[in-house]
Length: 235
DNA sequence: AGCCAGGCTACCG
DNA sequence: CGGTAGCATGGC
Image 1: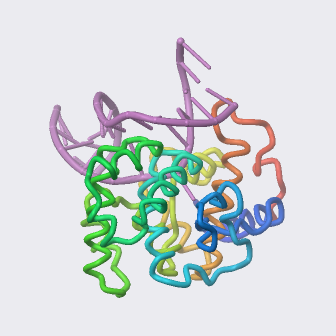
Image 2: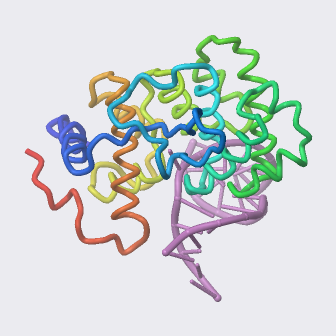
């Protein structure tokens, strides 16, 4: 990416926001109801509200969701999250008290349930040890099951840290637009976005969510649909 | 039926 | 370092 494209990523952001509007990430369960029926795919999003999470429980829910949705559709991840809520396990201490087999059964609909069960237990211990402090990126990455994207998702959405989240969709879209190479590393893509964008948490939160929304519409599988940002004038 | 989903670890050369 | 097999259920 050359220097005269400096504003390109900002222009794409504004275009996506114009197309789809605020996305209201990260989706949270409905904590007022008895049943976690109003979850992300229904009413869990909160467009325009950038103040969540507003307590430790909601923060922990985002942490769990970040693990559960790894390489998995959110609709599947939130089924597991609903199971965890019914088990009162959206709480690190209570999650760790659950029998592993019970936990596995709850995680099952999110796929990879054997490893994700272990990951949830690891991140729960880590969360307890934090005792309310904000983790560093390096600390998060030492937790088994937390890689680059999960760490950045947790930092950005649960802790409001200005860490840009890169996912498979991000690479897919922006390599298709000719901005990066397909094999560009995670950190290179992340650094590119953080270099080009103002260091703004709501913007980072919104941009990643908009990328996912756009990708779901046009980049699910090849050949990609013909309506692309490439066709849209940016300058 | 087959491909994909808001990745990560372990292991390979 | 970069590249990839394995992990698993559910939706379309």
